[in-house]
Length: 268
Image (cartoon, rainbow, N blue to C red; front, side, top):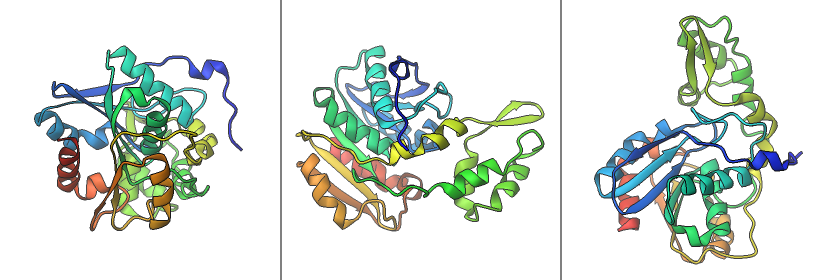
């Protein structure tokens, strides 16, 4: 069931962020579900060193940004617009991965006048199936943070439901020390689990984005398939598709040099 949003859910919040470089061209990076801005540190550093002014944000209910009572694509689109106003950014390129890709797509369609170029990493505008993260939520809920003494304790508790080591390591990047003897999750587990269906919805608009767009997908990932290309073309007619071979859904972690190169070429 899609959560109904109250007007108060759209109140302005202040997102946590890191800033790289000081060029005239802006690039705002939006991470994926259960991720954080730290996932993009290496790439943002390179782009900042090559003339871009880069902002990487923790989206609401993630990282060090505020935990709120609701979570949805429209809310995160509003957060990006507010962030731009707070930092006096009148136009930017947006790069979004996974959930962040949906936010970036919807932002470009809603506010084309604020969007220079669009980069979407391994995400299509179609709806995605519910349940894809069931094992992740089961693994997180299997962790008793009041008893966990070490990060190894947390990982072992998660392993019962989440067999893939790489995925466990990714989720554990969201683990933080509450104090000397306790851990907590940086992301808002309860709200993200309840409102998970909200981020699976199709990206829809009566209009299209007439600017340049790049969809960059992992060659080993199924998130962007050939069947998705007509819908992408309809909404983003001036798009180009790039496939990063031997990379999965987290293509920026699998092949960072290739992603860095493709983005720099696209923005040149």
